[in-house]
Image (cartoon, rainbow, N blue to C red; front, top):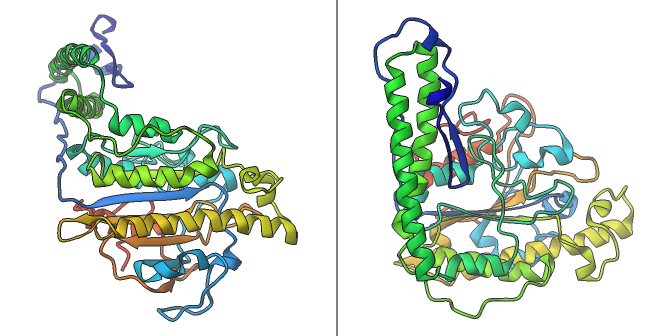
Length: 423
């Protein structure tokens, strides 16, 4: 078996044939079923999720009146002119606990520590959608964030195998990814590499299929899972082969210089808009936190320290200033999308934008009652909606993710900790 073990280092993935104990027993017949990807390209629907690490001051965010006649609050003021394009929700969460160490569940509904025995692990909704419909574009998804902060790196996006998706960390890097093509020499080397990797994948799959005729049912299941991983790598390789020689869109402006996470936020939003507009991707995430420094807004305090405000009025005032800045630029992003034509509608009509946090209250480390705003996507907007926060009628945030997935053309009735589709 050791002689038949293949290891593939390709496209950032490691694939090794699993140990199959039944090779020592009697051979069994039958072939393992390889799960084939359904493919992508189910329309021009897009999805963008924006989250921060430390939540928002919910007392200054949520209104008291539900429906379309809800009142302006301190944190809703920067997006008041956008209210017809978005819906504010209260009561949605995942029912998880862990404070800072549960924020990573924002887009998955599942804690890392509880994901091992789940068929989709703790995959986040962006990566789930990318697996299903992301292969029509150069980039199945784009993850933007920082590699600093209390978590030790951007935590917003996770794959089915429980791997954190490393982020694009600054505007210059994102600009290069979107608009700077590789040299001809590098493209030629890439074509050669693609051919070698495809040949290795063929050998790995053939060997695994041959072994499937010699193992019992338990080991067949292992091979099925393994071959699904091989198929995932094959999809990424096919995507790379498809785009290797295709020129990238023309850059609309010169490569920007990196400044800091606060001042760069508007530019990151603009580049994400361009990524959607040029159809470079249809799925993107942006995490705010880590290196988002209050000092760049004239606040001489640490963001994390401020979040544990202990009801100190000065600390709360500083937090509100930070949060209004983030919400203001989210509103400008929504307005920007609404002014870009996308066929007979706007880019905002085509793009569901989720804004919020996996932290409901940074001061008390609560992951419940999350701040959630949904914009665009063809939804009927203009309301403040509350759902039951406790009891048998409680509505999980993942129910909304099921609805988003279905609007993206993905046939599913479950995601994460969902109990149904959000009505």
